[in-house]
Image (tube, rainbow, N blue to C red):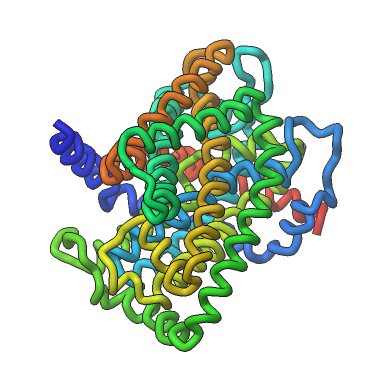
Length: 456
């Protein structure tokens, strides 16, 4: 039975992440980049100033600050995708997959600028009359009620895509491989369930308090976890500094040669398959074009949509260009991607252990715990927001209870099934998000022209 589910999930994910969706995400992102004349990059410094609170106005509409909105979005994206997802990409695609993850990140910066600007410009109201933002709302408010089926499709897929199975699965694996097994503790269904129960309790304490508690917790966790992880990987790179130039060069050369790709060719080509692998894992990591981040940024306290778009575009830069690159280099310079059969989080753990014997895996475990818990908080908000749109704000709390139960399920499912189901749901969410953003892109450019004529 499990084998059949695994086969179905794999076929589902492969079908959804075919060339049409890749063209929509990558082609759409390139369009945003060119159409805006690289606007997000030209105003990078201004984005930092907005993030720092230079333009904050407590009287603006919204619930949370620019920084809290970015922290909430990053809490979801800077997670297991950066540790386990990068490892999966390198296991399948080799060093060349990292290059295509970078491409995904650069394109993602433009995509997030457009989608999160729209999340503020076209905020709608839920059944309680509260202001809300996100793809479902900018579809309805920007394109009109006749487009509601697209908003419904996004929200239905969001109920599945927001489930925490991947993060919980990989955290359970990390606890087992790094903490329990090396110390002679018996592992199995019982240990997995105990891990799941502890996670569910910690998550419940925060998510049942609503968005403001989630955002404030994320604002404390995100800077800590990024700095800790950065310092740990810098130590690994210093230990293996002699290998660093070789692998940086290999990331570029292997991106077009695909000499280390181990998966199945797509339409007979391994380079195309490598591109799909890198883009898919990059999209899974930074979620640009998927539509989750606009739900967090749509709650920002601002009356200027462009400001939030600029803050949002910092997300893929931090997530993919910085954090994913750190993970990739740690795995590559230690050579564990060649010398072990591990996959996912276990491969990253091997890299930390090889470079920092004894203490390395425990540092990684601490990072994983913080990454996973922060991701669990944000995804619960995304799922409840989709629930609210579909069934009314008075019913959104039911999603949190279902979400907490799914944490227990995630602790016992196979990695392949989890990755494929979440990937497939993300793909479905991307279609309404990108289609609506492309149709509404002239509005973003109009807002940009008006905003920068006044503020720059």
